[in-house]
Image (cartoon, rainbow, N blue to C red; front, top):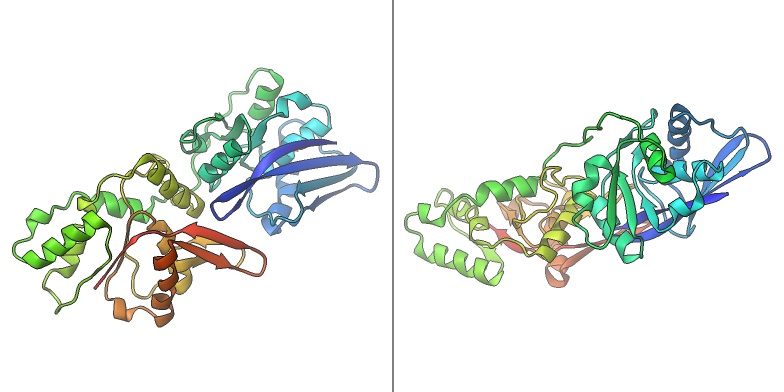
Amino acid sequence: MAATHSVTLDGLSGRPIEVEVDISNGMPATIVVGLADTIVNEARDRCRAAVVNSGTAWPDQRVTINLAPSTLPKSGSHYDLAIALAMFAAKSLIPPEALVNAAFLGELALDGRLRAVRGILPATLAAADAGFTRIFVPEVNVPEAKLVDGIVVIGVRSLRQTVALLTGDDEPDDPPVAPLEEVPSISWTGSERLARLDLADIAGQEEARISLVVAAAGGHHLLMTGPPGIGKTMLVQRLPGLLPDLSYAEALAVSAVHSVAGVLPADAPLLRRPPFLDPHHTASAVSIVGGGSKVIRPGALSLAHHGVLFLDEAPEFASNVIEALRQPLESGYVVVSRAAMTAAYPARFQYETL
């Protein structure tokens, strides 16, 4: 028997998870226990192929994988690396002391390569808060994990390389793994683009311009009314250029939300500009508030945290979407509840509507 550690995410809050692997006599089988969902249960097949293709035989015995504590729901593919390393340790191929004070995150390909995963930033924050001194993450996630102080971030490309680092053997020359998702954050690209727009470009509209400056200076919400074509949208699009850069603490919080959503830019893991979200009026309540059937993801309210949520043609939005804004505007966070789990995301933003 052997154990490693990983992290589970509940919204933006992370908790350490102990991954235990027990190899015992009995009919050959691999069982995953510990309130795991379908994605985690599939890890046994991914890990089996990755271990075999990394040069080690999978035990022809009864293998029990336990994710503790068992009362917490487990979701995601980032437990793969911890499960495979616990298997190596259970077979005495990795010394137990090499796994002390270390957390492991990453999805394994069938050939043993390590793929990028979502939520590395909040998971690294949780690992540092839990007292871990090292964290092993996919190489492509290293810039995101290194935003956290107080923990050593080790980037790896494959299961074989990770084992070599833990045992002191020569590291294999594995090729780099490209990011799976190179989708830039909509709020990041929108904010960067709109930050270049200048309020000085607008002629006239003195009262509206003063209102916009007051809203930017005080963090106030803004309602603009008037006939079509008089420049309301043009004015609001220049609001991001009036806002200052985020502080480090604010940038870390905003980046953590985008990391969980899977839209954090790989080349800019720390979002310094306030996000700007302008969803279409046909957007559903789930896309605005957040949610999902199996995995709860943050919506536009949370992606606009410390930034601007712009609802153009607000009366065209569904009534339940408008009503859903009431509580986040008062409390500054969103709580999404499902039958199996509940997730809380920050949602303190400026609300601009036409």
